[in-house]
Length: 241
Image (cartoon, rainbow, N blue to C red; front, side):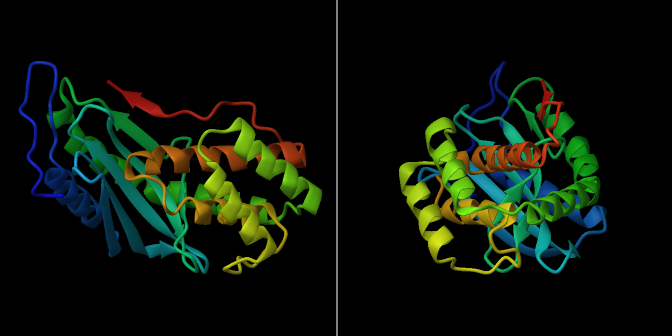
């Protein structure tokens, strides 16, 4: 990934190298007082779109650990994006918070000067976002799902929402019938969430972040509908141009 040639800068396009993002992220994590537990990197075959994920050893609970992620591109198909999420320890499933837990910046304007300060401030706030995700986890654990509700949710995922494909729906159905892992909340929305993110493990690197943000938003909204506590505000992504 680091060996992929960085595109030339133009008047309207300002590249930031994958290596720069890695170095800046690690430095910002250290500056925030966090300790990196593991680093994961994925990219498209040509290396033009890349992702980095960092689990944080000293921000966790018994079931999940803070995870900070970024996505960068050299082919102008993706903005530079950072997101705060979590990794479920027992299975390695990913969660990405989709409200105030992510930002994106186009490869233009002052991105090269803007990025370091913004990333440092952003990572410092990640502990607060992790607390919100813990609340979401507890809320989903308290939503019991009968079999007919699971079937309805699976059909809705497949037919109405674009982040789940038929092959992934088949995996979810298999996990419902015979779970690979125990999530300490049988027949709950939390278990269904993890069946879904388990099925998303093979998602293409270029779609990893967007699909996981979409999944988390979807399940939080479903939790609201199932409990009668529907969110009235829209999920937002902080757009920085």
